[in-house]
Image (cartoon, rainbow, N blue to C red; front, top):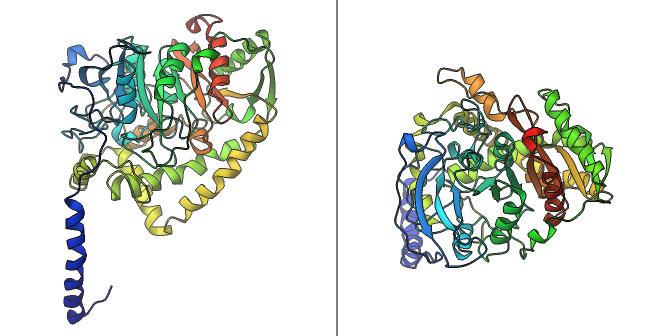
Length: 485
């Protein structure tokens, strides 16, 4: 604005009046949920005790004496807040931050009798589908060290696959629960949008933010979702919803289920034909179990990543970076201490890796050059994409496709060119982001191996029909050891 000197003096006096209102607001409490269970801060494990670099912090925080998770150890992705325990979200700029609040999902695990075993490393600001961008170094795949564990819930995937914990809680913005699940051979669920509260997790864009269970098997996953799901009254993106007894779907027959084999989920430019073959073989297994499997075409699926990209890139830059983690237009769920600490990222951009820099530069350029128009267009196209899947789900119970087009590639070396580092971050996502956009529940479970590395099968259901997803996933799991398929 062009303001003359006399006018500026007048406005300065008027602004002072407004600032006194802010001072009055500053005297009020932040009104954060109370921390219910006592704890000590825990410790950072030594390299000898952290062979895959999957742990960020180890704790032993006990909850209720009894409950569905009684005595079971649970690890949380390190963008989910545990009061009194350090959180860095994979980044050098957040290291040293200690939350003053428990995320809703943390409180629910403790209320269910679970024990918080610690925090699992994530990728730098959750900006990578590979596990090589964490500020402390790469997270390794327990099936083949030197290969990616997937991201951005990388540590969760590695710890469950290694058998160090049975249960983990990750987040998913474009596949971040399902990518590590596929690469590491575990079960990862992204439930219906809003079913699990995101309160107390560091956001990317509130329209594509999910929290999800990552576990060694389907039964454990269903149990954990029962604990995590349901409205908390704090997350502004949540509908009024309640958890169901998802474990009641376990052991049910899939005879008569109609499963759609989505052709556009196969045969991508970077698809491994052996991966496609394993997933098609899994579809045939469903036929032997009495399900009806038929091939369908959803052409718009091939454009889903293009629709997702502006929301992810521009949403991340505007909400997570410029507005220090949260953005505006929310009716609650803010954590002021995180926002204050996160402001220092501006002084440490030289510490960002190539993938993080690319995400931020692209998102900033598109925001400045086009004023958010592509973000807006992508958001407007979401109902069209949702309708394309719903049209098939009207006559079918589930969609089936590979979670990822490949098995876990090698982690880039420290001296790898920028192009390789970026490629290893993005190449695996032609199928997963679609359902962050549409809100359909999507689960990845292992269905075989290629060269000793796991292959993931993705099942997608109708909104709030997690029961059918678990029913089908458990039926497949019971057909045999996936490592021998």
